[in-house]
Image 1 (cartoon, helix red, strand yellow):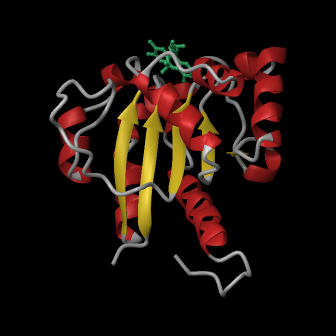
Image 2 (cartoon, protein in one colour):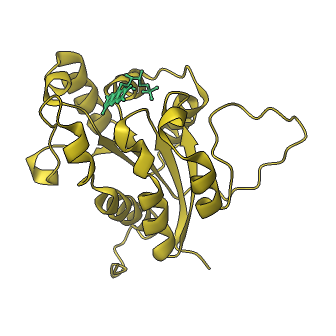
Amino acid sequence: MTGGHLQIVVCGAGCAADVARLVDTAQKQTWTAAVTATPNAMDFMDVPVIEKLAGVPVRSHYRASPGARRSLPAADALVVAPATYNSINKIALGLADNYAMTSVAELIGRQLPTVIVPFVNAALAARLPFRRAVASLRDEGVRVLLGPEDGWEPHPPGSGDDRRRVFPWAAAFETAARLAYEVRSPRGRPMQTW
Ligand SMILES: Cc1cc2nc3c(=O)[nH]c(=O)nc-3n(C[C@H](O)[C@H](O)[C@H](O)COP(=O)(O)O)c2cc1C
């Protein structure tokens, strides 16, 4: 028996290369995990390494083979990480211009517990469209890990490589697992520890 199934959506930012850390964190807590990537994110990732770890293909496009059957379990939670400025704005607007964005749009619409972890610099994060996007996603019930209360702030432009090392993969999983557990157990059974 597994703790749950985590759907991960990766966007095109430097720390996409580290998404194996999220897969590994989930697996250590008896969850399974599958990775979907935006087309831009594919260039940042070592796809064979992630596929070997997750045990399933990384999805970036609509299924090519009409005969291929869905074999993944239904997701218990969604983590979008790293989430780019571009994709956060698109998700908030409901745009679905690639497979990853279409998946996210539908899973949020199904009210799947969803955590978005931006990786944006302070100049981009200061833009009104971005601030509106974060507020709009929160209004919709999406958990956006950003701000002093989450211990995760936009970084100064040009410092992404340093910030990449402290990207909150563990917090992303813990938040998603907690939300999934609350959905399964709305009356608040004792929390699972991890
Ligand atoms: C080397 C490199 C690093 C990048 N890092 C970031 C980043 O940290 N955050 C971000 O929002 N965009 C970053 N970008 C820009 C995005 O890749 C670009 O906006 C792209 O359109 C995002 O596509 P996606 O949101 O569909 O994945 C980076 C681009 C390059 C080439």
